[in-house]
Length: 288
Image 1: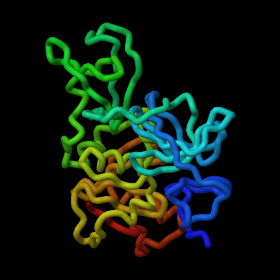
Image 2 (image 1 turned 90 degrees about the vertical axis):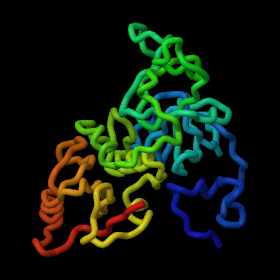
Image 3 (image 1 turned 60 degrees about the vertical axis):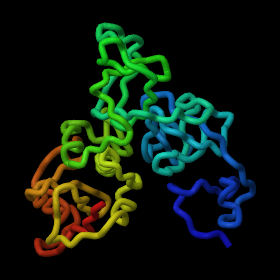
Image 4 (image 1 turned 45 degrees about the vertical axis):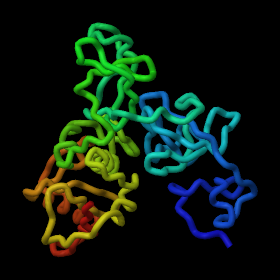
């Protein structure tokens, strides 16, 4: 009998599944999978191979992606190496082979790669926080990192992969004003769980992607012990506590990343669900 699984995290369908799942799920065929890595700034990962289908999440430059099906219609089905999300991506977003071992990540919401260490040159691509880079040297003046792809990034916009930003709120607030985008993970657009995941990643904690999964991650915290950086979990929504009764979150209300009183969010939730003022809406508080 097939073990129940979450299709977001388990590369299995009725007709095809990853070889490591043999004996755990039922599928007509099992394959080992092949390593690819992302070569575009970002691309949508979808639950179906359809361009009109809403995205579940996004893949970022330099991330690895294990492919289990290379379709003739230009879609690949596989699993993202960094957070394990499963779905379909455009073939043009990746290239075959293991991702170069990252030495750095983009450490600011958005930065550009240049063809030379010269800020006046036309840029090649704009990358978002979390994009993975392999540096192979520096410019003569030490201001630019030379990358394995033959491009350059301003050195101050990158950080060594093991350098952490412990204040989660500072990272989240660097995205203030970023448009809300369902499934987004970038400075071009981000959603509530994408913002939380990104902030925690810069602190060295690798959370699952979606809000329901984040609500089960880490350690549970009593509501009376909420601290700065804790994840406040609601039905279908997450926010980061700022430690003063306010929150920072990506929300569809102003369609942007914003700071507001926690009480204002909870009042909206009660109004939307027809709940009384004394009925709790906070479902969990999680901490690393």
